[in-house]
Image (cartoon, rainbow, N blue to C red):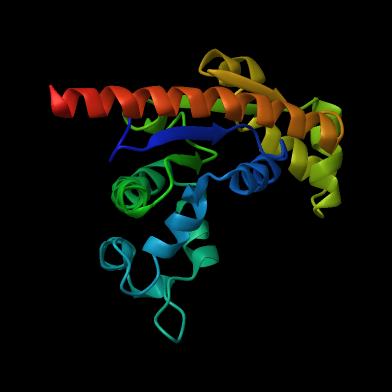
Length: 214
């Protein structure tokens, strides 16, 4: 597939699985790392791709005194209103997608790791990724990590239940990485998968050069 001559690894998985740690390792190994959730926050900043449309759709009451979108107020508007949430996503998702494509095209690195907790639901895994890595974790470990972040057990279990099941994540995975043990075990899995991705990226680039000269 590839985009802009880059090999794209999509990284996803449930909350608390350790995606940030995997991305940190990938960055150390040489990947360009893009956090889609961070991009989503940036496109709603003043001057961002989605800012004007979100304000027009939801009104000035969602703004702070300095003109920024108050994400908590916006969340309260869409939290119990599925139609409002769909309207918001219809504005934000395309803006995020365009911003991600621009950043991929501008990256000097041959492999880009794209992290998005809704990678599968948003269709990014199909439209842009060459392979999808799913980070999984034992549920007891996941719950403990969320509690360490300050969540109550009730809130943590609610967040866990609202996401795709582990089986659904794995069904879409090209690579499954289990982060239920220690960092050394996690790093070993990431490094093995990275080496395979490097080989595929080199093969893809060689095929692209061959097509250009034929």
